[in-house]
Image 1 (cartoon, protein in one colour):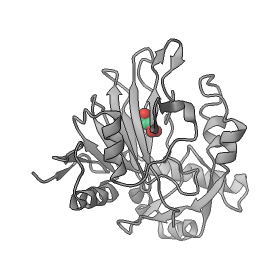
Image 2: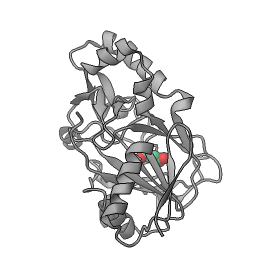
Image 3: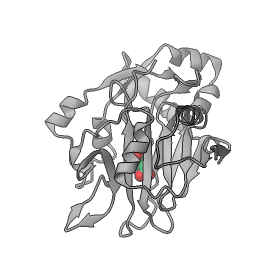
Image 4: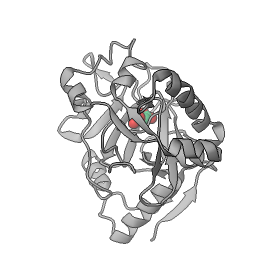
Length: 284
Ligand code: SIN
């Protein structure tokens, strides 16, 4: 049986029906998924029920994987799997707690940011804990002509430490990055408007999690424009919000979306996810 693609929302997101998550895909299926990813930004595969090894093997068909810079969040024996979790066992957290509870695009702070991420739901509260994605093509396309031209000539600075200095500042479970981790993630610059290598479409490429300002501009000039762009990009009509079921696998494109994990659930209830992260290219 071939695969079919069904849109989930007006903004972005589609469900892939009939994909084999266990056996290798043929080249045409890999290409179809790459294309659908670039077009829809987020792909849902239901009832994935796969092991960490199968999750890694499925993900690798779309490119090499990236290990996260904070090694203690890796799944034991599987450095390719980044664990996002509030679960504690014997007093120890099993993964990154409070991860992604702000708008961001994975690894935008690297010189070659991630192409995409594949998040597998292992445990989820009955209500709450949804994830939202914003369509950054729409964010770009709905800007005025003069704003598009202005931003088209700019680069933005992305810095992983920013998330630690702001969103994690008061959280003892997320201590500051170590000097070694900081050395691996120096601030980098990327075009504010990037072109998607598969669809050829332009997307806004700044995010509240990691973007600190525009290259060559002082904070007082950058901040109001960034604040406007973040408000604009997260307009409700640009958003797909996913209510997770256990075994949902969501594959999103970090080049044309940003995402936000909602912290609206009871933190004594387990929310446990496994993520693989695809390496990417330098944005252009
Ligand atoms: C992430 O940003 O990768 C985590 C998203 C989530 O937990 O929903």
